[in-house]
Figure: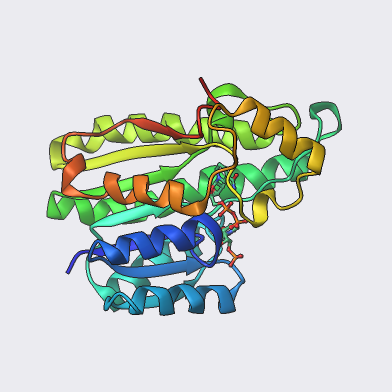
Length: 243
Ligand code: NAP
């Protein structure tokens, strides 16, 4: 059975990705930071598709914990065929008022966390000459957003990392891609005011926020044999916001 690790899979987009991969036949390691109840719900959702699942706690911004996460996933489920770099946070603020702590927290989790997890996973993929890595970036990393300089920098950085790694490991049969979601209805966007929500919808040609399932199907596609000739790509899943 193919095996996947999804970071940040206790809720939101990551939970939907874990379930989509289970539907496609993957056993899934469900990475989470602190929401153990959420992670257990995702494990149950994966199990309902008849696939094996395990919840694994790790702070991806910690190099040692990120490495241990990959080791534990492989020890419990087997060699990783797919890794989804989804764990992420926001700490919004206008540029001039942004604290160095808020800058670092977002870079450390979203960008360095993606580096630590994928570096740990790619070693085995190189030996086995195959695998798929998908980074959950953001349309904000492509077009910027006032109040999110830290987040946009991290998400743009993930895209640079994905393209560079794709060039390094393509000859070994490893594909590395990114998705760039627009506004998706999860805990992360739950704090938008009605006015902000109206603005987002007005700026989105498809006229609505996305759902976690809008993103998870695209990630599952990128992990599938149907995407066998796709690497270094960034697929916007944003209802047209980034056009
Ligand atoms: P969410 O509902 O806030 O979930 C975030 C997930 O990341 C949780 O599972 C959380 O785990 C995990 N996480 C956070 N910090 C972590 C850390 N240091 N170590 C390990 N896990 C950590 O967010 P979401 O909306 O589903 O977002 C998922 C990804 O999509 C993020 O990378 C986000 O930037 C990206 N994205 C979201 C949107 C959007 O509009 N929602 C748009 C574009 C891109 P615990 O809760 O267990 O701590």
